[in-house]
Image 1 (cartoon, rainbow, N blue to C red):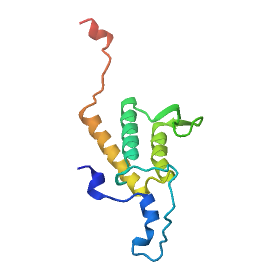
Image 2 (spheres, rainbow, N blue to C red; image 1 turned 90 degrees about the vertical axis):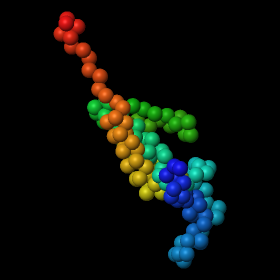
Image 3 (tube, helix red, strand yellow; image 1 turned 45 degrees about the vertical axis):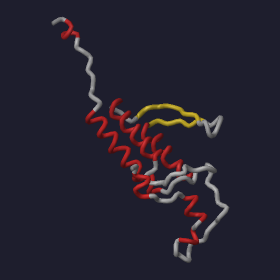
Length: 143
């Protein structure tokens, strides 16, 4: 069973639309509210998968490249013509993570946990499956 089905936390769209069912008179429901992404995944929100993948991928790349600094640009299938520029791998991972809040698909705690999980998986992968390859020194060829 994946962690998502262990915890079954609802997504913002459900929380906002059903806010009047939380036994808190201070919260008001907005049954017509839609997230920016319109459709959200049909599974629970916790932990946030984009955060897991982004943090984990960045951590592996930073380890392999031995640096966080890396200038690159990305485009978006969702926002044609928009290009984002980054100077650090970690900055791109962070933006990919928080974009899920801005899109209305996740709460912050989904993503904070997702980032931690992604970094933990990356540490495990780097420690157990990736090893540095060293170029053979010219002297090694002479032996």
